[in-house]
Length: 263
Length: 96
Image (cartoon, chains in turn brown, yellow):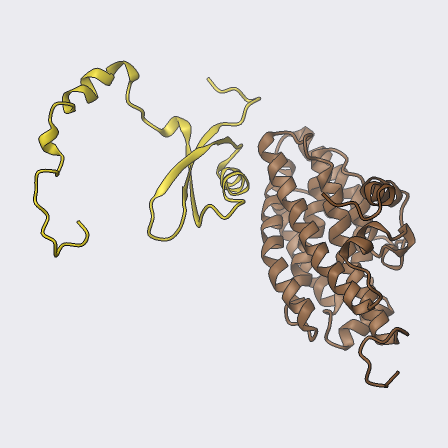
């Protein structure tokens, strides 16, 4: 094998790092999209059914682009379907905020606002990535995510600044989910390496912008920002909460029961 | 009389592309103006149907009374001379 062989079978450290980084991005969208899909047929109103499903479909679309790219980087013939449906839980690298249960509609909205604002600030910066493919995916996705945040933040303000009941419910959901946001911005060696190569943004920059955006939304929604606490989970490294297994069982059932099924 | 259990009804008008007029496409329920636009976007433009949306509270629309149909519209029926079909159009005129 010549030294010039691109993406050679024996992975070098750089391609392996990029592979895992792109999986992180794809898995975040994939798991959240799957979670949101659980609302279909159960939303508080027919109009919300379509609203939530549209967001879920956008997220699955993003996941397809990321996972297809990840498969090409890996160079072992795994396509988007193989990566989505045939990986074990420990090979998923999403932050665990997205795998948390939907709860009531208010809890789903709180989770959505926290992630939408994160993806918005992330993609806005990643659109200038030194990796042309990631830059293109981010540039396309940022328009979708901007709408997601418009939708979710509108709901959070409505519920937070609504009745005593709706206010109490979304504040409880915010207190419940807030600790999981810390993981999004906890830059590990991989995040650091991607930032140094100009592939991904500095998570500290993303955090500052996210934090300001969230403060503005919470203030309008008359909600209280919870305090940050240290976290003890590492979904980004494949260590997940008890919820992901159930999500994957449902999501992967068909492909594992009828391998390569098409329709 | 306002029923709090049901969101108000809005009529939705979508402009398919620049230069065309907004056309009525349907209705939806929404709690407020912002939600009306978001629901209209999610319900009526998810297959690239439009570039602009109007949402109008249904109760703001003033409609003609169906019982007055005869007096409002019947008189126009025998006035075919109001149709511009009695003119010879010169060949040079491409569009009129």
